[in-house]
Image 1 (cartoon, rainbow, N blue to C red):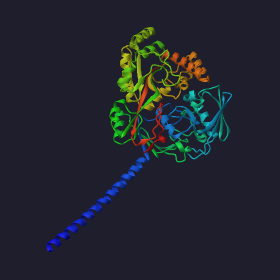
Image 2: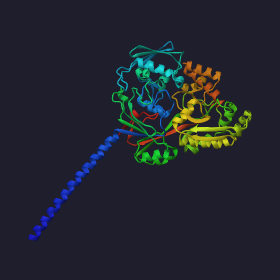
Image 3: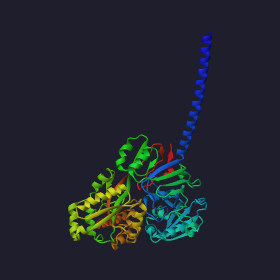
Length: 514
């Protein structure tokens, strides 16, 4: 009996110890669960995005960079915005507009809107911002029709155009014409160092070369488009494979550009969504037409005919691209390939003979900014070697690249152009753009056609004018279209509300965690 009692006592004590251990493990598990819950909450408050390169500027006017515009969309608004789904202009800081006499436009403004510094948005800010944009040479395509801008009242603005102009609403939706506080413009504020607008996010920190951090604007005027995720962190990851690895490892949530070579692996991952976006982004090989011998259209046409676009898509893009030979993106109602010069090596040699020079004397350095464009330029190098033309590939950081572009210190460069409409696209061929835009043409006939297209309000008539411009440009190759991007964006499968524009942008403020 004593042995039985002793055994029972030992059993009870053991059960007590096990119960104690069980209680201890339960507390640890709860602590761990709480920590995980807190981390999950923090994750829901943050969206981490991988970019290919750093934005060259956060100002509205001192750049024409796709990545910079993406940052501008976070911090600024315009009277109009370009809807990322439809590519149509819709009111933003304006509530409505009307037009009289084909040249007088009246915009009524939203009331109660505040800038990030707490100041009130009024018509005075619209006037100051549009006048400021007009003073910046790179803004000329988007401001040269603004004859006058005046404040009718605190919340009404009248814009008078030089002539009837079909593209005004689109122009007001582009970053050049987005609205800044008038007092800060007058004081010479550095909007690159500290962007101050009315946008859904505020810049919190910019660590040059590494990252940009934005936080939600809690007083954003548009409740439907207010930021759904509190914090945005953009990390600069130039290498495509490194971006893909970071996404799979959970170090980033959204990759703005996935390389074609990395797409297959990501497509097999159920935790990741790969979005394929057919774009109006035309990737272009620009030649400096002010430099000899590239001022001769026969040499430029020879180069255009010698480049095998299919090689580029297969070799540099892993098949994710669409050949384009025309001097305008395909996908607009007005798009055309009239007069386009396709790949034809025999024709290239005919143009070379018409030029009459020695191709071995032609030195053609091509400026590029990322690994994909290095691959593109290398294929062009191989193609043009068949004509005896010497090509070198010069890779550089984005800021240096745009500096060279701005001062005309280049012979060739690879860039892209993705406006939301055809009229904006062809305006860049006007001679006024020669200092700002590679590919502008010093041709009075083309200038006249551009002017006519801008003033033509009838859609069908304007489409024909645009086709005439494109045909003329196709025949002198100031720019050589290569392909249209088929963008690959990838993100965590739990990220919802992802809208990706054919022009290259994303509404980060509309994204949310499931």
